[in-house]
Length: 463
Image (cartoon, rainbow, N blue to C red; front, side, top):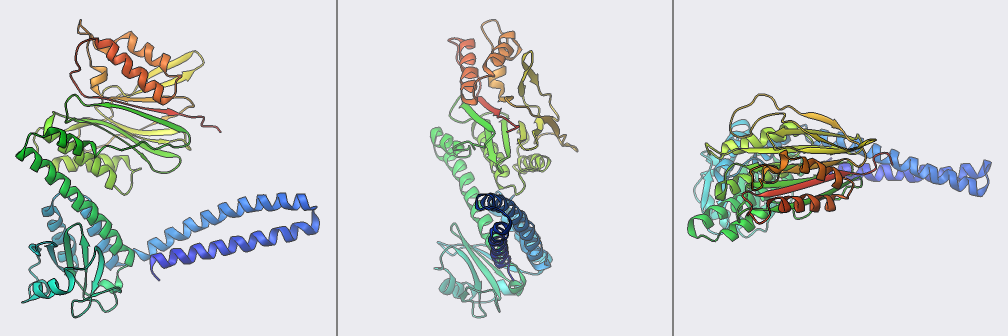
């Protein structure tokens, strides 16, 4: 039984069991209780049965997933898929094919450009090198639509992995063709997962190539800026007990500042604000790599893992002088906590509402720069959250801006006093107040750095 089938059976079974139990309750209740009382009992039973059903379905789903993906053959494909998730170039993908398919599983592969049928990579094994193979594949596979196709003995596409000699995935202008006899033993969802990951990979490769091509062929920096902005979230999540708001203004078209807010579920939200060293194309590229690394991560609650993945991605780009500072916080309104890493980010602030009035708390760094100097430990701190608290994440374009005398805004009494006064406002008005304070402070002088202000205001946690 496949994972998809097991999920369907589990959903049908738990729904049927819940419905049967719910039908029995009113019949039993009517024997002993009046009609209104019996209906009240039935309503309560419905709620109880619903939550039991959801919990049971979750447990069964996890067990079915574990069973479906526990086989050696499926794990091989799953590990390859995971490796694809951190590939940023076509050469990275070729290396992944060698390391995760050819060596451990004796698979052989062809990677072809769909439009020209040009060979990007060809495994040295005989299955991928026999005479007239490309001509046969051209006739039988080239016009197949995007998706997963299994190969018959005659290299014709078929829907089922039974008796197949391999599979082909058509994705974003490429054909990945893998020859193996293991297809019937691999969970079908693993192939679909690989197709999705390849879609993301080839889109990522295209975006990076587009950045470099625009930089080399023209000075149309606005186009590059638009591409860079596409990495930023188009909207912020709206969890039930958390308000989010953002102000973002790059100094020039291409910025090193970035931000992200990802709703993991109704209780947990991941927020990130960071700044890449330098300006221009290299900073834009690093910023895009960071954002993509976070978005493709499977476990966005693993803060330490995300930080290490970002560090590895920056190092893999080969720049000697590029790094990032960032604040990454996982806000959990159910547990009323925030787990966070502050990697040398300037003055992340929490403003709490106490009996004597608002209190401004600055969060100290928990680690150094990311992507420049190797580190052994990622120190994750945990902070309790209270109703009406505000988390302010501002880039150094806010706190380090100076007035005519050279005094920095973040070091003034005005800064903390203004934050305390504005902390009673909602998140959007709070961000507006902070940005208004910034521009009032510098007067007629121009900005000298990018400005990013993200605010997260905690709602009523005890409701």
